Amino acid sequence: MEHDGRVWAVRDLSRSTPTARGGGTLFRFKLEAIPGGDRQELTLKGDDLVREADLVRRQSTFSYRDGDDYVFMDDEDFSQYTLNAAAVGEAGGFITDGLGGMMLLLIDGMPAALQLPQSVELQVTDTAPVIKGATASRSAKPATTETGLDVMVPDYITNGERIRVNTESGEFMGRA
Image 1 (tube, rainbow, N blue to C red):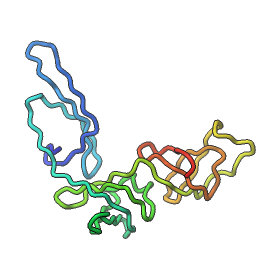
Image 2 (cartoon, rainbow, N blue to C red):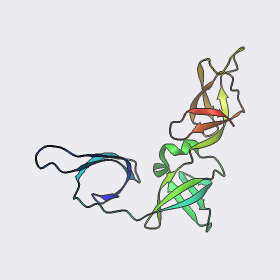
Image 3 (tube, one colour):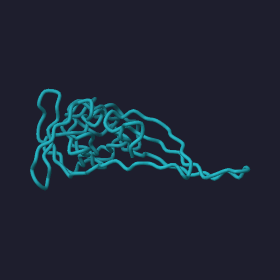
Image 4 (spheres, helix red, strand yellow):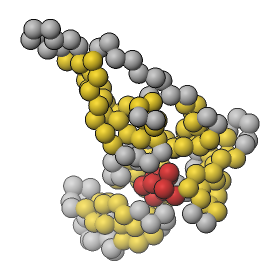
């Protein structure tokens, strides 16, 4: 939606109907700015008007990095889009060469934000050695992946293994 001259993604919406005299329906929005990621809460009355943003989603694949910029290729028409590191934000820790299944958000034909797939496969590059007798129910240890992302993994994970990581929470999901 558009609000205060910016484009916002609605992350949560709740509705309440006050029972007091003259109470009208209220809508509470939790918003996140596109681009930028600023967060804001907004309450509107039931008769307030909201403009829908002109937002297009394009399925894309990561191609390469050019300095601080990330270059993505549209899966349908093969056009290339560039996002700077600020627009990519924390998602950069999940992006590997050739990663597909991402949605590039375009506002007025210009790339503005990125949506990652639910999970990605990453290779563990640095973690403590395996502890003899370690099982999945034991404690976790820190591991660094090929992208520099730090993830807590079970004790039995070793260097060089590929793991699945949830892109929303950054948590270990299992071996790949």
